[in-house]
Amino acid sequence: MCHKIFTESHQDQKNIFGKNNMKRFLFLICILIFPHLTNLNAIENKIEFKIDNEIITTIDIIKELNFLAALNPEILKLDKDKIFEVSKNSIIKEKIKMIEILKFTQKIELEDKYLKKLIKNSYMKINLGSEDEFLKHLAKYNLELNDFKKKITVEALWNQIILSKFNSKVNIDIEKIKNEIINDKNNKITKFNLSEIIFDIEENQNLNVKFDQIKNDISVNGFENAAMIHSISETANIGGKLGWINKNSINQKLNKKIADLNVGEFTKPMVIPGGFLIVKLNELKEVDRDMNIDKEIKKQITIKTDQQLNQFSNIYYNKIKKDIKIEKL
Image (cartoon, rainbow, N blue to C red; front, side, top):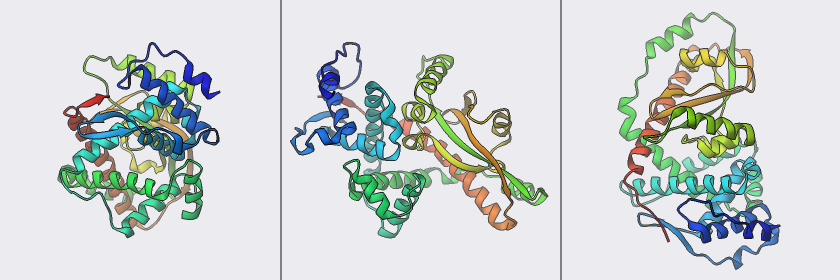
């Protein structure tokens, strides 16, 4: 089966790896999907490409594939070219972030207490109940906990940079939040289970053409995989999943768009700072309202702050990416 994939023609491939390396990459996909067929230790570790002075090797690509599949096994349902594209973009994004991080610190590390909290948040997002379960899950994809720690450490340090640069620019109307919560007399609140795709377009690209591409991928591969392919959001690696969000946490414009959706449908692109947003309604429910007003106010402020910081993150990443040289070898 792997031999068939490996020997297929890919004359139309246009990517930074080139034709020969693309064939080698398809072989690596076989390693991921059929790990029992191949001895990983027997793989020749070569330099595949460079991002500035950051070298990307064969083993880096294998681990990136495994990492993405561990977070979202749905990626394995994509065709091999899409898997290649998602993996390439993911590893490039991480390396660009690391280049920027090293301008501010020489150590890519976090305090153990903070790291443990991030690990717990990560395995809870994929519905695992303990670190032991998570370790077994990672092992299925030839990953160790240290591999995962490195990944989330880069993301955490990147978020710290974004916070230091843009926290003063976050604009939250606290009085408005307070008044809305205090004046809301309902004992029930509506919660949406949402997923997102945040994307940008090239300078000469047409928005409708890009949206048609995304819609086609949603139709063929599902929303989660389309998010992995197209989204520039930090949620891309988990299929764009936002989870359950209170209706009151969402701005009025987006609330109106979601109100027009049936479960399973998604919005048309909406302009946001740094790109365009598509939101899918997965589920909705009504729950008893938390009557602790102070707690609810703090929660809403945190959510809205995170939303704005994520937008600043996308804008800043796109800015620094323009100055990064990607070189095939």
